[in-house]
Length: 118
Image 1 (cartoon, one colour):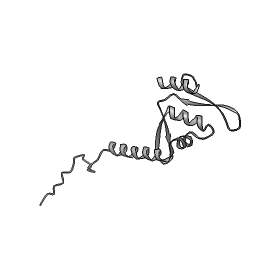
Image 2 (cartoon, rainbow, N blue to C red):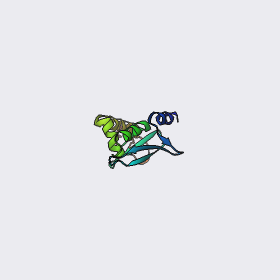
Image 3 (tube, rainbow, N blue to C red):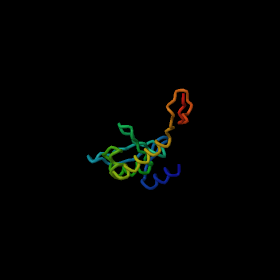
Image 4 (tube, rainbow, N blue to C red):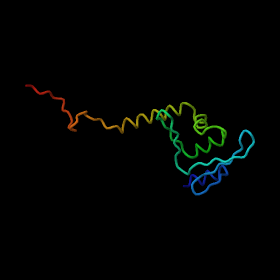
């Protein structure tokens, strides 16, 4: 992953085989470290079933700017509510496209819409 190498150089980050390690100083002055899995995207899932995927670079940027906040809140501050609305709308469109329209018949045959006369 070339992106991880660039991020390491840009932000002076550490890494091991599974994680990017982000050193930071908390608001109380303590030195801490945050471990992010090496993945292309980080998914933030909400209780209501919504989710938003962010790139690793966006997550690192959020953690560096707002180290004492939850990652989801820090990402929301960076991207704002407009970005979240656009992502939710995009997800709704993708979910609608993947749903298979069914005829509702138990035998699996599609209805033709013609009525039979007795």
